[in-house]
Amino acid sequence: MSALADLRVLDLTQVLAGPYCTMLLADMGADVVKVERPGGDLIRANPPYVDDAESEAYGGYFQSVNRGKRSLELDLRTDADREAFLSLVERADVVVENFKAGTMEKFGCGYETLKEHNPQLIYSSIRGFGDPRTGETDRQGQPSFDLIAQALGGVMEITGQEDGPPTKVGPGVGDIFTAALNAVGILAAVHHRERTDEGQYVDTAMYDCMVSLAERSVYQYSCDGVSPTRQGNSHPTLFPYDAFEASDGYVVIAAFSDGHWATLCEAVDRPDLAADYPDAASRLANRDSLRAEIADWTRDHESAEILERLDGRVPAAPVQNTADIFADPHVHDRGMLADVSQPGADEPMTIAGSPIKMSETMPQPRGRAPLLDEHREELLGEETVDSGREVAESDD
Picture 1: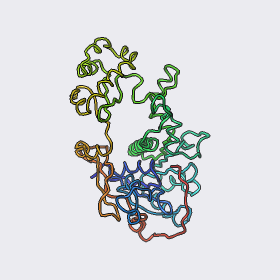
Picture 2: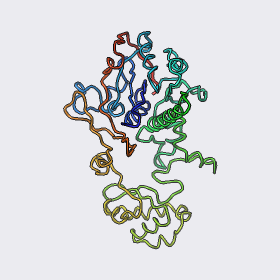
Picture 3: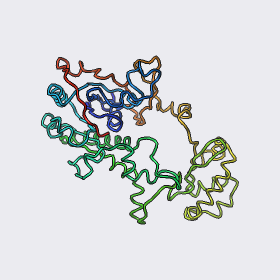
Picture 4: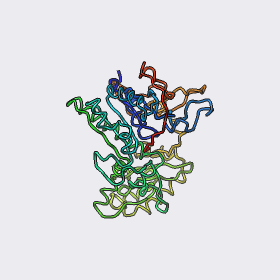
């Protein structure tokens, strides 16, 4: 039995943040019912595809974060579909949505209404700027995406080269980090309900989560009153902790402790540097010249040789691309690449596995993503509905 096998989640989310949150729950065994807007999740048709976009049911974006879920297409603007949804709410543990604040109320399905149908319900929302129930602000109701959250939350300001512009972090951390924290909040609410029989509202805002992600900037500004900014791959208080160019690519070296530093200087054949700069303060004060010394050495050596010289005594690694990751035995041994069937294609699609490992109830992708409305009959039985479909506006 999986860890969350007794948990049913009604997932009204789309695009990335919400689906990633419920994907984490599905990987841990929750029965996640993806209640889709008319026409389905906006990203069903997003590329890439295994072979042919015309024959495949959906693209990699949708497959990756909706694996192991069941699908039901409903238009909550219609009475019949709303009643069908409310019947599911009565038997659900969790509802998750990422509409703009007030959208569910327009459908007649706001938290207070759903709570009347199921007093123990845990209702969770993911929005750009949170919900008024947990802290009202003048930004609520504004649209938000990962880029907006990274910009507002200070992540872009501290990302990039010193002489370059503010830079977005590659992965959608505004979505994914918010999603992970939302899943934590949901599971905390489940635990609270087990002790008290009380449901509650869980709310995570993308802006809030980016402030939390950039926590180092908060305490730095509190201490010295200076807004942190970009400094490439280096660290504001640790050195050396940076990326260095090798003759065949890049490596990262994190030799910030005195012991690591001495070992690095030995590997570089520069024991004088260890003697002249024996502590963190002296290394930080002379970081530019010391970085140049290390960079001169790394540029003359291949990545494998650099790592062999450091021999596990100093934290270091090559900067890998995705092809390198696919070829890394560690990634396969840890189950971080999972093959799932791709409807309409002869070959499976490879998606990222679950990073959460448990000794007794191991999380894992539980099959492919669903076809649109694939599970209507088993979810509603004789209560199937077929009504006009309209589009609801999502916040993510």
